[in-house]
Length: 249
Image (cartoon, rainbow, N blue to C red; front, side, top):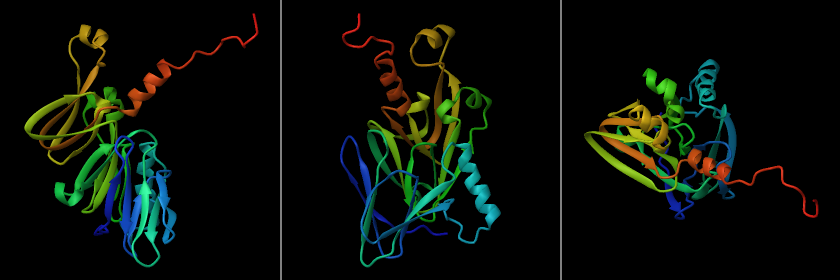
């Protein structure tokens, strides 16, 4: 199924959102709970799956949607369509500070692999599935990077990154990074998890036991502030329970 050709603009700087412009009859799909606002002519409907295969039977839809449960995502997706006259707009944002990355799948070979919680929205016709890293090391140590989402098609997709976005172009090169800092990568990139070094470095280095290794030729998108790292800092500095009330001795 050919994807709908949607226009868009990125709004904001440190806490970005994406506003998608839809012509009459065009549709954009999104994760539940990421819509910020929509104009009067936009109608939305919650459906099972991404709707990429219109002639897919019930069992096919159940299988496709069931794969999303493996990633911890909702079984359903929300479809926003322009049912009015003229151009209409709908906007999406993630629940934590960061940047929105627009990617044309047609420009990168029709496929993007991303962290399971980074997908925001996409033009209808985009197939949204999962991919498991086949290497044993990734399975035991990969954490955030073991189960990844795969976005396939020829339209626009929008993914979210925490903090600042870093785009790297690899040309038969290797890049090592914290597993949580990976957002997405294009075709031609081989992904693996490797031990970060010797025992002393792993225990006392502060960089964790493992690093993600990306090798090959293609594009890699990184984030400076993964949500997991932000949450750890908040919990570490949260007031401890158990204090006495004011006035008590």
